[in-house]
Length: 60
Image 1 (cartoon, rainbow, N blue to C red):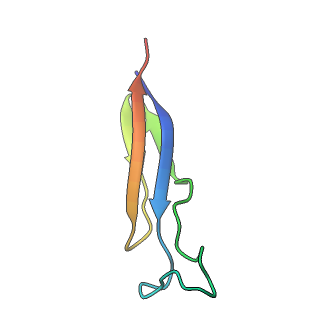
Image 2 (cartoon, helix red, strand yellow):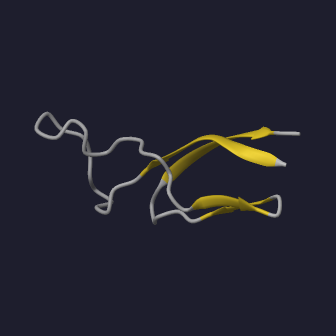
C-alpha cells in the first residue's frame, strides 16, 4: 500500500507565462489536484504543459 507524502505541479494556462518584477509569483509550484491511489494504482491527471512531482511512501 502507498500514500502521498506531498504533490506539486508547476503550470500556467499561458505557455509563455513567466515570473516578472510585476508578477513575481505568476508561475509557482502548487498542490497537484487530481491525483489519487486506487487499488494500489497511482492515477494522475496533469494539465497540459506542466511539471509535476509526487512524493509517495509505502505503508504497512
